[in-house]
Length: 112
Length: 115
Image (cartoon, each protein chain N blue to C red):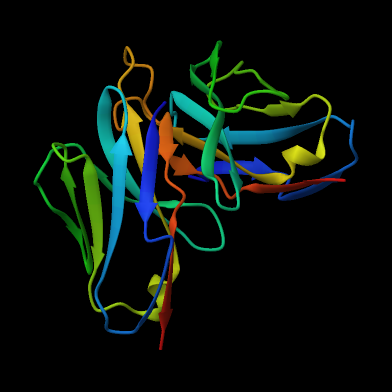
């Protein structure tokens, strides 16, 4: 079991560029989510999904898109990167029954 | 708006001390309170509490929830340098069964344990 995996680990983008952060889990979890973590702000929910084909917005969705075509994968797309999106991004998953989140290792993104 | 507040924001102790970390919450349709430990990487799960007054224990760590007063505490006894980390508390809410894992996190408490 690899758990929750994320790629890349680090990324530097220029303002206006787009990119996709990848997230995959092999635990057959229905629920997947993306958080960003900024100093002094804790973890904030960007988008989440309760199953393939179902996504919804979290607390800070602007500037990000997601899709869930399979149970395993939940990519996060930055449409036009801005310096305010410099952050550490965590993907997390859980089973709907259990509810406790399992986090991926994180992606550190810098937008210049 | 759902809110989770942790205190203190940072704490410095010496090995062997006992610490108490606090978490208060205001969450509509509250379901459970979770504690995570974060070192220089992803948060790792410690406890999930759903019932008031029932202590959960894991080694030197224990936690309890008070649903009347809307708070939880995390106790660490006989602290070790390996306990140095950020401790995050999060509250989850019910919303038609689709909010599992949709957690509201506190800012975290930075615990530093000196030898």
